[in-house]
Amino acid sequence: MATHARARLLDTAEALFYAEGIRAVGVERILAESGVGRASFYRHFTGKDALVVAVLARRDRAWRDWLAERVTALGGRPLDVFDALAERFARADFRGCAFINTMVETADPDSPAHRVAAAHKQQVADYVAGLLAAEGRAPEPAAALARRLVLLVDGAIVTALREGTPAPAAEARAIAAALLAAEPPPGAGPEDPCAEPAARG
Amino acid sequence: MATHARARLLDTAEALFYAEGIRAVGVERILAESGVGRASFYRHFTGKDALVVAVLARRDRAWRDWLAERVTALGGRPLDVFDALAERFARADFRGCAFINTMVETADPDSPAHRVAAAHKQQVADYVAGLLAAEGRAPEPAAALARRLVLLVDGAIVTALREGTPAPAAEARAIAAALLAAEPPPGAGPEDPCAEPAARG
DNA sequence: ACAAGACGGTACCGACCGGTACCGAAATTC
DNA sequence: GAATTTCGGTACCGGTCGGTACCGTCTTGT
Image (cartoon, rainbow over the protein chains, first blue to last red):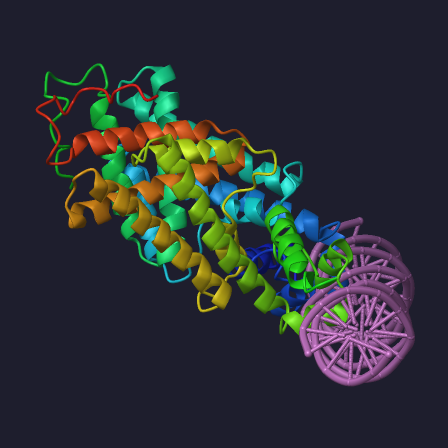
């Protein structure tokens, strides 16, 4: 039998929380759909709040690993982030960003869940800044640009959630391309900074 | 005494829903803080869901009226939308966009609350498209640009919610300025399209 | 002055919430 | 093979959920 109860709880809770919301899913539901006994749940977690934090922490790692894997597979350029997003948006079970959703549902900014969600976005921004630095940009403008790219990412996610189509990823990518072209990295050739960004592929 | 019970219910519910979330606030709370009797509530609304829809519909009108008022006061240009946003972000009770929050909390896309929230964003996009058309842009590119500006608005809102500062409004404004400069309206003078947008004031 | 209606207050309903305690069965460990 | 641990199942707790029914009161229109 082993100690797979904890893993099943995390899997079931993550799916239900993401699909229907944290407050909308009770412990009862999670126990029924995971097949875990009530006592076992409270042996592994002090309560529902701890489960939420554990789910978010695991998803944070998994999501950033997935993003890095997809971006490197697509070419490792900053704009590839938006192509990775498009894949995510096209999934039938897409329901926005779990961390944005958590911050919306958890009003208290001091809540552990809220903190985990906020930290996630910061780490994504750091990753994007790394992609920009790899293009030859200096650290400070890279960090500032990364902030703006993450703003575009969040805007695309919210728009995709509202419209139910992956199109916003391409729109955000186009905006990001214009943004990056306006501030080319120092090592870039003597090309016209007003030129349209090269076709991707 | 008059028939102010309905208005008090809407006021209290709007404040509580926005501050703490729809699911987080029970009818009990709304009755206690509004001073309205339980029976009176169910005389005015068929249930909590109807109250939610009524609150959103009223807020939709009020929010768009507020935006139009602020934008015209600031100059009536498309970029003024972001300066209006900055005022909103600076408020101590700012907790994101009530309609985004509703869509996040209400997972079902067919829910009336979800529909109202989605319709709100579309009407904001139409308003922004009108601002762009007033600058001399053709309808089709104006609508496409408006979509992207609303994406920036949503990104700024989510970022402001996460960081708790009004700074994202200025960042989104800068991105929007680059976006508009890249596609100047046909009537614009022979100025260099690569030039920095003129200082606002 | 009087009737009609909107009002606030309360008791109550079944259902579900998160959480605790206890049980017997199964797997692991020694 | 026996002890320990983890497991699933269940009964139960107080509290709150959304919703209904009924009460007396107070205002308003006439």
